[in-house]
Picture (cartoon, one colour):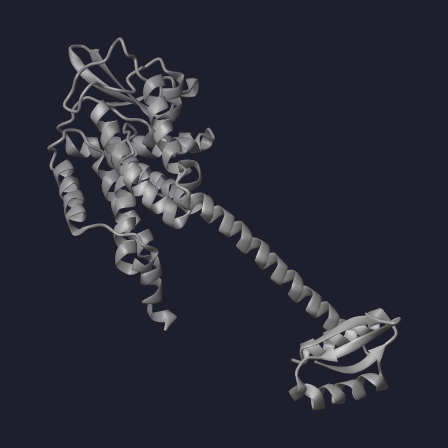
Length: 354
């Protein structure tokens, strides 16, 4: 390190040292006996440093020296910001790797907790009935919480010796007398018209009433003990893997997208009477599957056996083996998860990207 010159004014010394740095010369300024000594660190820079010094002495007030100081200051500020960000990330990763669920995968367990709490609060425990998948849950017709979470409420009544199905799109007084009904379920055309009418009515009223949460909240409702146990098992398995690897924000956003798309898909297919986390679960399975195929470096993936069993389960549900199942939600969620998981690989292969 060799001395280049000395400058009496501190600010001018800082400007000149910064200009040297901008020109690619490693330099520094330090105080000594009331003056500021300018040092360059590499002997190979001697000729260029002297040339810049001669130029500086001819016009020390040139604005380019002050501009160089601002540029250097902004570089240091950005470096400091990045260092702070790295430190925060290191602390966050340390907490995540410590194994605490709250730092590793909080959203997964919060979603499981919401499903359990909703099942407890929305079930009439005195009127539980057994079924193909165990005792019924979320069966309390008087539950305000339950009525606020449905996309719609389905009511079956006896009228003139016949069972008539009413679909009350949202539980609001404004809808009184506007219930849609159909008595002849054998007429395919009438059923199709009925589904379309109910779907559009549901969409319009839900949005106009500002109750858009109804497109999400059915995922927290479950119809039986086995239903909730099965979904929570898969949610915990897939959710922990995705949230730990991709982060809580990305995981929550993914679940919201899958919930809305799968619920709206089911709404168009069967009308507004469905429930369950299955659409999101199948979406998470599709997402992890594709991430393992297209971005294996992320550390996510599924065994071939798990994928085969998931598709087999999907087909069995569509075949009616397990009764009345929200198959449209399953399919939309599954293919939605596949598309989201593979979107980066698809984007790179688009013709206009080349």
